[in-house]
Length: 231
Ligand code: 6GU
Image (cartoon, rainbow, N blue to C red):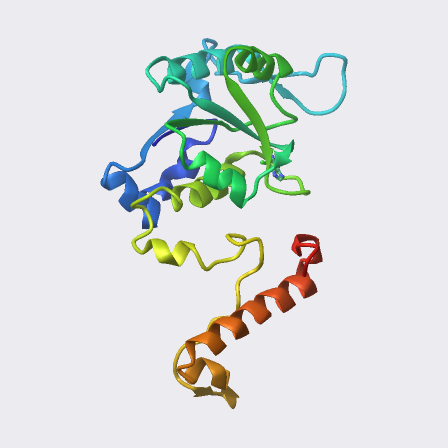
């Protein structure tokens, strides 16, 4: 998969050199390009924003640098890229979307700052390709960079070969629509708290049933909105 990021803070993404994603890049599974929006300006001050049409507070990102940056990134990219703009006004990002995006050949992330990007940028690229506004949740971040980091981590670990043991992807929160069950390791007794005896029983059927009950109980308690109607 090829991932391109357009941002005014390219250093933000230096951390993608490390950990699981860094290894995936070294192995050639993920190809990453980080592009500075200011490189696509032509004035002395590398201006990327201007006052909002119609008045009001804050600044809006100008369309011209975005047009040049995105054209350049799309020029030598995949046949059918998807462009994602992180935005609190977008559709909610979830595990299902992460799974779908893990199959893309090229994802381009456009990180907005200030009060947003001139609407014509979205409209222009949506006319000839796939454009999505995507939100991490119902709160406001100063810019899209942190949101894009989260999305790249969620998508990247679902690409075959990125996570060493694919089985570890199966039994985790949201994969089967429920929250994950609690995990324990040795020692059997720690600070007067013991590992639930069923997990030490060797009875795999009983363990599977206990874990399932724990998933349902936990989901009902903290995320009743996720609970399927039959539960
Ligand atoms: Cl994707 N972007 C910004 N700027 N704020 C957010 C968000 C995204 N998701 C939640 N808040």
